[in-house]
Amino acid sequence: MARAMVLWLWTFIMLVAMVNGADQKDNIGVNWGNIASHPLPPSNVVGMLKDNGLNKVKLFDADSSTLNALAGTGIEVMVAIPNDMLRRLNKYKHAKEWVKKNVTKHLYDGGVNIRYVAVGNEPLLASYNDSFKQTTFPALQNIMKALEESGHGDIKASVPLNADVYESSSTMPSSGDFRGDVKDLMLDIVGFLKEKGAPFIVNIYPFLSLYQNPNFPEDFAFFDGGAKTINDNSHTYSNVFDANFDTLVWALKKNGYGDLKIVVGEIGWPTDGHIKANTKFAKKFYDGLLKKLASNKGTPMRPGPMEAYLFGLLDENMKSIDPGDFERHWGIFRYDGQPKFPMDLNGKGNDKMPIGAKGVQYMESKWCIFNTDAKNQDKIVGSVEYACSRSDCTSLGYGSSCNDLDANGNISYAFNMYFQLNDQSVEACQFDGLATITSTNASQQGCLFPIEVSQVSP
Image (tube, helix red, strand yellow):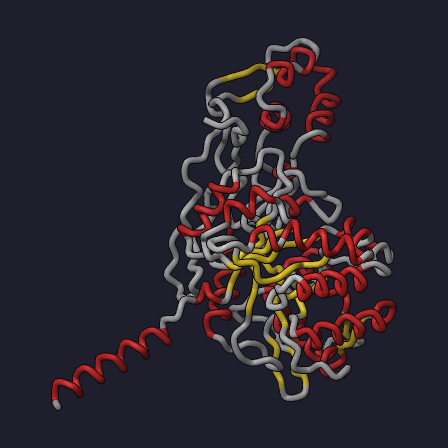
């Protein structure tokens, strides 16, 4: 009897430990974007996901090589349909073809664990000026119908939306409602999501609140307190994420969908390209976010566990910088899959460097730098402008990681970025005699002169 009691007690203790120590990473995923000149091979990236225990990934397309690399891993996948395909998918036959090619094909035994289909990417963004307003909802309906008719009704289709589809007429979340010009459409979409058991996917960026408004209180962008709070209907808000999320909750509630599941599709902090975009602030933000997610406390209006996808996994050096130079620096990992700062994905504060991509093949160890002995230095300005316009000089801006380079360093950085993006071609390091190739690492304190990932199989 005593032995049975001891066994029961031990089992109970183990169950409690399992519950209390449940893997926080079950609640989080990462966004894997691929807008890069020399992307890491999918096998390297998938290995990195597995090594770090990341069990959910959100894609921006349905690339076959990416999905093939994810096959057999058990990682939950959100495949995606780009905005420029939405119009085509307004015809059901094309939606049916898309599902067959990009979903059914990968669902064999030991295949890809597809959980969601993202229909578009922030297609109702105000700055798009209604470009996808007429095509988004029909595409969503057709994709969901095609999934169901193919026997994949457990895979849910939704539309990842920017937080600008809702707004508040005051600083209070309780004033939240859908943006006037898309409200009718949003109610159609939300009603459909409710009917099909699909979540509302929203992208929330506290960094942008700070970036877009010079008077925004900095502490309110983070989770560690210190900011002036907002009191709204007996709820207290100490950070902009909670306030933004609950503005959406109020918008849903006012329109009869207060219990609709919400997934945070993108949330993160960039590490370069702006004075507020650096590893110090990124670490501070992620430390607070991951601790919050691990607590399962949710927000004042929506307590409980939250599902969120961190943005993003890797830096992407070919993304548009129209929103700002920081757009190419959202990665938790550098372009080559190497970690930038310590963190604890379980939100317990046990910081360590994430495990970087293994087996990465780089180009040769050589750099293109400014030839200080060159005679035709009157061509420097034009050459630098040419190099930067055709590569990525976003780390040179004010407050960025390479901002402290001297004049010669700036020139060398621009030349090297152009040289690397052009596969270290000798012709890409001429600039009318202003440049020369060196085997000495040109990187300086705090400023990486990168060597690109090789696109040739070893």
